[in-house]
Image 1: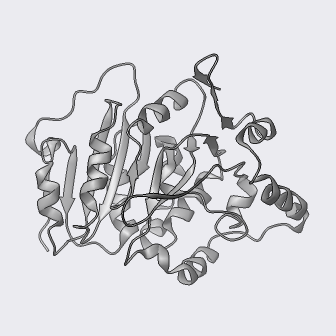
Image 2: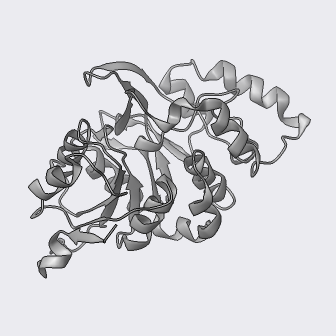
Length: 288
């Protein structure tokens, strides 16, 4: 398939970002996503935050996906369509094209709260953050919220041993953002070779160097729909097992504690993990 591309970069109409605020790059990877893509695009373009670079990587769709992308040609920073070897091959293209100091990715069908990226920018600025996630939110096929909860802590040791998504709830990719520097922890060739567990490989790599901060707010969510890679959980875990590390049994009491405290109120979680957990102080009118 011949490569097709477009967007503001190709029109020599590249964005003019406002000074003094970080640029946030969002990448969407899609293949035959005509039923879900437009809602995702709109959620990125409708952000209340101005400095957003949006990149869409299409894997050679045969449906109406390209026409949907072209509909937003004058608002998307860059898009391309060509055959790839899988989701993470496509995602690697988008991540390497991203120029923002903060990066995230949102798959077709998933979407952000309209004020999400403004909050992400606010927390990354001046707090020394390299990695951030928010509440875990799920939608059904009608875009109705069906589940929401707030993590208590994501420990680096537990991330590296595959605890999240096994003994503990998963790290929600749609609510997670990281600094450009965090990408330096990746083995790009290995990342491209993955078929199902590339998201966890990101977390595994980032955890070698950075702590995952949590904000008690709704940033984005995951939509359940047909034909998702995420439904192949057994194969996902087999692929993930190839790179995670075995957990030291000494951490078992701590794991049990984390499983119990996951269900505690956010105010208690803040006390437990104050250094990496942000809540909104309504009296001071700020996140702290």
